[in-house]
Image (tube, rainbow, N blue to C red; front, side, top):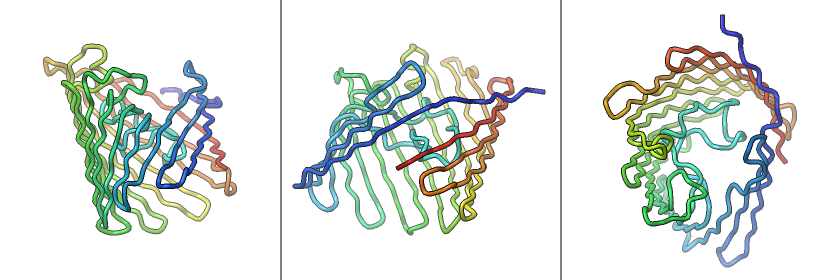
Length: 268
């Protein structure tokens, strides 16, 4: 029997600053502390300009639009992400992005120095991220992303339905030479998916998720194969404190692991 791993640490502190200059110009700066080698870091720093009611441009360092699971703990329905973001999602990027939003749809294009390199300043090879979003009703959202840079391509598709206390989502991904391996000079092809459901009972919530991914090298041999199941209850203690509990079972390359986590999220 595998003994579960228990996590105990202050993982992250973040301060988000937003300022409206007026005349359709705004600025956002996010500063964070992480309990690892990164220490204190400027996570995002960008300006936005509303050209008109539908079209907005932003420039600076910002997070990719792609992916169902967010980078921030406050945007997740459970403690952990699936773990496959480095193979399928963009990351923090430096560049410029434009988004047009209409009635029930949105499109966006970002031109960045690197799809997943927030410190990259060389723009000799430009990364391009495109997004199409459709919201036919208030309850349904469908988004598709196609991103490419040099020999790297990322495809991310997800859909969600939320009404009342229920939220369900499904995501499918494909990639070639994902940033996680391209930087090491490893050719790869990958695919992955997740299914997630959350139900909120007043101050109590319950999330279940299944995820899986497969990565092959240039010869077609399996480089990494993983799947996992997560169950995560949560309790809103008050308006500022959310307690998140998680039990996760995962198998990576035929190696099993179990983990237990308890997270306190304080927002204000």
